[in-house]
Image 1 (spheres, helix red, strand yellow):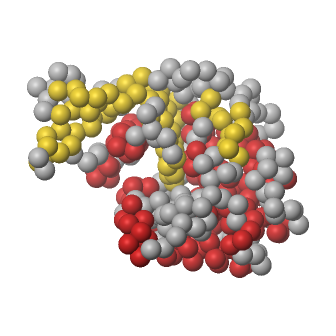
Image 2 (cartoon, helix red, strand yellow):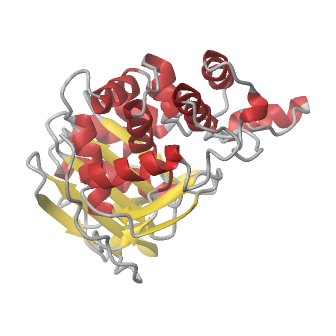
Image 3 (cartoon, helix red, strand yellow):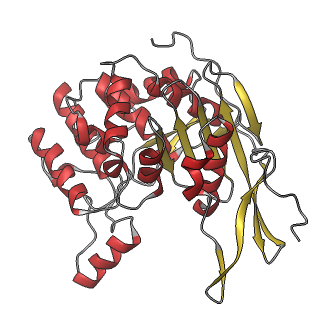
Length: 339
C-alpha cells in the first residue's frame, strides 16, 4: 500500500554521528569510526539508534532497490536475474556485461544509449584482469550500468525520451522521486547527482530502513516483492562473486541487503525487521562489521554473521588487531582499555 502523505523532509544539517566501531591494534585504540545506525523492529518502531538517524543523508547505491521498484511500477518488464541486476552495484564480471546487453537488446537499444559514466570494473580483481588485458574503460563495465540499462528499458516501454533520461525533470526520474517518498514515508530533502550521473535523493537513515522493510515485506506479485524476490534469488547479480553483499544474502535466509558508496548499507528481513548504517568516513572496513552487529541486535543468529565480523588487522603479516563494534551495538564487545 502506498503512502498518501509523506512526512516533512529530514533536516539538512551537520549529522550528529557517534562512535560505532573501534580500530584496535595491539590492545590500543588506534582509530575510531564514527557513524549512525538504526534498527527497526517488525512493526517499524526504532529499537536501537546510534548517532543521527533523522538528518538528511545520501543513501547512494543503497537506494537502488527503491529505484528498481519505481521502474517496475512504471512498467519495467524484467524479472529474475535481470531485475536483480537493475538494482546492482556490480563487479564487472562477464555475466554482468552480458546482463547489460540483454536488457538493452530486450528494449531494442544499444550501448550508445547509456548515459552512465565510463569506468573500469568495480571489483579490484576483475579490474586488474582488464588492465592486464589492455581493455578500455566502458559504460557497461561501470558498476551502475544495470540500473541505467533498466532505466532506458523503462523509458522505451513508456515512450519516454531517451537522451535526457537522467534529467530530474524527466518522467522516469519524477516517478523514482515519487517512489522514494512513498517507501521512505518522507519528502526528499535535496536532489543532486550520484557518481554514475543519475539523480540522487537525500533522505534520512531511518527512512532508508523503512523503505527496505516495505520492500522486504510486500505481498507477492507487487513491484516491491518482485524486486525483493529477484535480489534474494540472485545476490551475485546484485554485487558479484566474493562480495560481502552477496555473501550476506546467502548466509541469512530471506535477507534483503544493499550497500552504497561512502559507508552506507541497508538490510531488511521478511518480517519487517530492518537496519541501516552510515559510516561517517565512508570506510567499508567498518561498514561490514557494524552492519553485522546491527543485524544481530535485530535478532539474526550471530552464528550466521560470524564471517562478517571484519578482517583482522595485520602487522608483519600476522593478526595484531581487529575492528570492534561499540558496546551499544554489541553488548559482548570488550570496553576500552582493551588490554
